[in-house]
Image 1 (cartoon, each protein chain N blue to C red):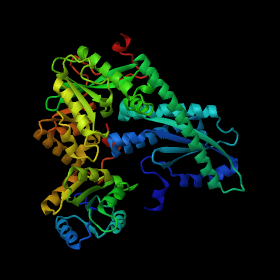
Image 2 (cartoon, chains in turn blue, orange):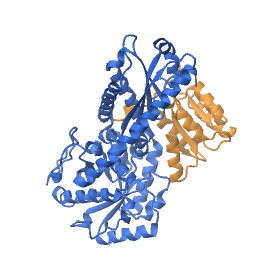
Image 3 (cartoon, each protein chain N blue to C red):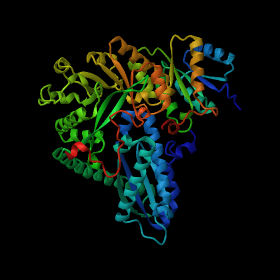
Image 4 (spheres, one colour):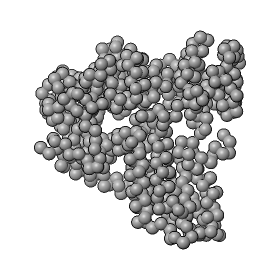
Length: 429
Length: 142
């Protein structure tokens, strides 16, 4: 790697911290002070986990572009402003005010943060879709470094960075507490609605069924991933799962046509919930319900778990393994669950047309499914090329933005409208 | 200037016999070939030659093929315009899954057949744009 490559991060095209410090040295010495902002982007790692590293690279690229565009227009643009990319998914702003203006105040920083968050989130939603945009948060910490000529400048700046990073962390913790209270309010008011995401037959694109996706009506609870993350931290998983299941089943009879199936996500942990059983689920026709179990969560007690599955299976419920192939467990663990459907992990579908290993893996899964009488579902199909590829590999069913044109079916997919969050019919009744 | 139909290829294998068979075969098909016999040299050669494709053996002393693949794919300037084909016995799901994690684009099973190797080379080069540039992730997303 040559010297110049070390100065800029290749994805965001932002300078690295070392390069930035060198270029602002004189400005800091002249002005005598510098404001450091630490942007802590939360949950970017989740994007990588769910969609694969290529997607996070691409999201970071969008983030960098959106930040640059926003800052050129911001009031701070006239000052000497440098952005650095320290590592992973955080960003640092160095802001040396102009000679005749005071350093940015906390109020100005708060305003800047809100604007930036909006700008980045809008751009990510435009380029990568609502699901990804709803995932992440930005927390900004601030520190002011008064230049002391007796101390080494680099050390003063690195201490300032640390102070700003700590401030952003404590903000994150405060926000976390607020989210827990939002979740409690959601559970109390049953503030959840369901989006039904069509799953179509690959060959003719006819609707085969719908996956129920829960969305909170509160803005902070929009993403199911966020809701469930908060629920896990505050020991409210069972309560949240119950509400999601009830809502999904309530809407089923109204919205699904005869023969269409309802795919419902159930966490393996839910099977330990005494109130989750075949008798309490208000399902009229269990043969039309497919219970999706993620491969991501480890199943601790296999024999017991299989026993629980059997109770449901005997009543007519079907099963899907969700996120199949996400872990390193291989096909054996999938076979153990005897699924009727195998939903491929999204990271296998993203850019599958460009990766021959992904193609080989999906081909293997289709063969495996055919041998076991199961059907394979490709989730996260966003581009024509991806659709054509999974079709040619024999994938039975497809779900994703690419096939999500306004449907002629009785169930119309409702794209989320923001803001304010839509209040669905079932929440009003 | 490199011939766009025959962009440069880097062959990495610690077994000189293997490396030379591949080199001679691909050279005869018109590709300019550079050979490296271990992981460290592979990285150096990669930065020097800036190949469009790397054929990478997995089992090597020192830096193994996985590590080299990861470093190549994460290279700040060259990483996104190169295709990496692993030459290995990737026999099961877990291994292939690991290969994906390192950023590999394709694999040729070992012991390899030269015709299969050539078709892997061709299908991967085909995915590079005319400028020899891999489609960037932003172009790949909708």
